[in-house]
Image (cartoon, rainbow, N blue to C red; front, side, top):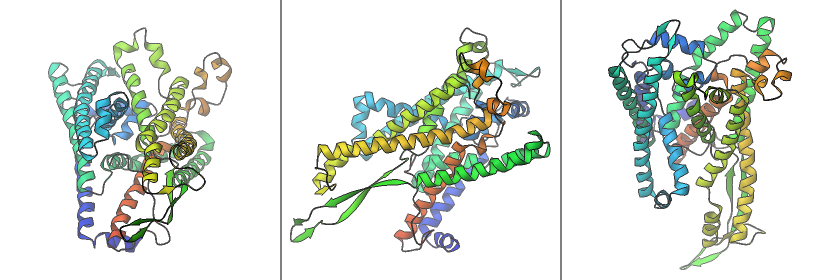
Length: 466
């Protein structure tokens, strides 16, 4: 490992890329300490600390703590992710976007440009919602805004929208001039930087015996659960189904080509953490509306309450959305018909399967089964943080709530733990770390240096935001 780290700085181009990535991440962290003008940051921080076990704590992690302090980077990368979701969904029903996707690099650049424009539009709407909510909301008899009015709204919209555009640009710079996976590394940095505070919060719970006499045992179980989830994530992220492919011999000019055997790898979780991010982004919208004061006192309040973080209806929709986006995302990045056509074009075939439509159907069947496994894996990992934070909320299940209300409090309302110890955050941290290590190792091997491992190569997830 030490030899591999030394080799990184021996390669001039790789050294520049790594140092440039660190510099961009430092700029991102610097902007995370610049507050939005006109906001009582101390009162806002106290409010977030009191609601750490809600959707606010969930959103705060993805923004790297910027949301609780309402810094210039408070919106984080979420508007960009939401814009990507919208355009990918529209590509299915809008022929123009579908045509651009098939035009190669030029088409992708055009779609990226549209994603940037849509990110700005979404940032404007979200910052308007934040400004309006802060003006109307109060806590402990005080207001979050020092000088309410149109000036505060305009300033907040300009600040947060500009900050969102800068975060998007920083991520693109890491992708183009750094070590890649720019957007992933932005989220990765936001989660990792909050881990020390999360550990300190956990330690304070131990000192104050928050969970009673069983606090030491609960701590050991939590640590064991984290290690088990981490090992499970690494195992699944590196798992793949290898389909044998045989290439027939053919003569090209005066040379004999082909005749070798290889395999087509299909990853268990090809979409990475993107289905989880997509599902969370969609469910964030109604929860954000539910925090607006006039919505809380309207006829729609019960509906928004049922969609609150951790409630049974929220969980059902969350699970369904993860499964849907797992299949949707794999349909974008892997086309069995196209793979079968390319295989036949170059004289390849799967032993025992006829080339053409039968090969396509065979690949589609394998892809469907393996995607189900990957989707269930994402659901299990994603429900871990929800259970630790908010429990099952089984007392709110229609018709059965009265019978389930007698279950233990920790099962119904959770342990109130920080989201940093959840499965989704571990999935992002482990997945991005594996991707980054794999990309650096590929650069080292290309220049005839030893990678991080000698016996086997590090296999990361497929890059999702590169």
